[in-house]
Image: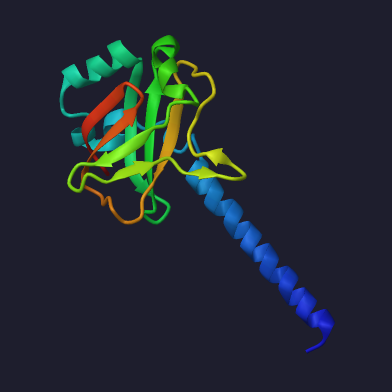
Length: 165
């Protein structure tokens, strides 16, 4: 093989890898993936605790509504999404100094939000706006499976007995 052919193969391989990476990032980080679905359809009845009291507490105390908690990225990440109903009440959830984590209730394992060199923390930390859905990803090394119960903790915020879709 000539040097010219090897160089062309390398370029083609590089382009394929780059396109694959962009598609993966778009799929993982797409914040508008579930904007039109109702919260109950997105997360199922277990996540919402089938309790108006739980929903009301989240809305009254934190100004949010949970919309999704599901496995993503070939089960290597857990996607947690919520809609902001009151930006002032939800503001503490967006502080960059506050480190969110997820607790797997069966094993007690604590999963953190990954922090990458180029992208940074895989969560929203801009000032919240009412009506928008925000997200964060928790790294998962095979500990949590669909159907498991978890708790999400962000500073003083704590949502327990949430079921992974």
